[in-house]
Image (cartoon, rainbow, N blue to C red; front, side, top):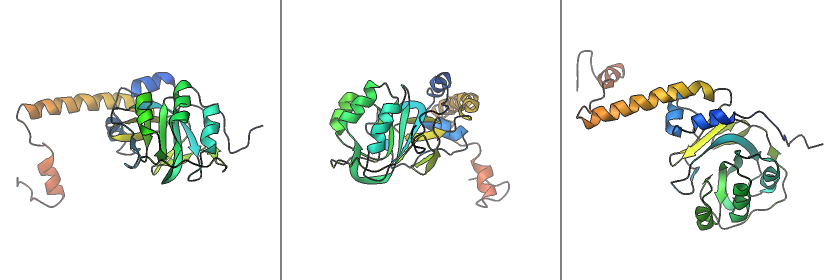
Length: 227
């Protein structure tokens, strides 16, 4: 029987919902999710072209130790995104070319880690999506217990196992497993509205229609005044 700190199975956001939600930028999903769910900007794509989307496979480690990430590679399912609470440590790398090659071979969706990676040029060639707090050539230890399949804090955001995770050049965002489907129609509307507004701007209508009212509400203009 597995240790209670290792939860091997948990509900995941369904694959069809992942596929639909993956069509939207994290920025769009953040906006329709109430401008929340974005991980701290320290967690960035290793290379700007990298993108990912999938259910979160959560891992908590002690800073500088990757024992539980090795355990996670034995348990994660194809499509899962490893979400690693590494406590924002940058004194060593928790993963490198060997582990990332294994993750790609296992058909995982990518890796999001509040920690550093190494072998960055090899990882670029591998073309497997990695989001991290930069790089460090120093290797980790493999000695310290941690947790798998429990809620974690990653980049200041609570991530539950099975939540929807997506990321692109802007960064990473997370939506609760039971909430993501309800955001899809809102995201589609947001994309259409932004495309319409950009088209208007290109035609010369650069003034924000809401600006005067907001300046009045903020006390920067009096009622009836304009800039």
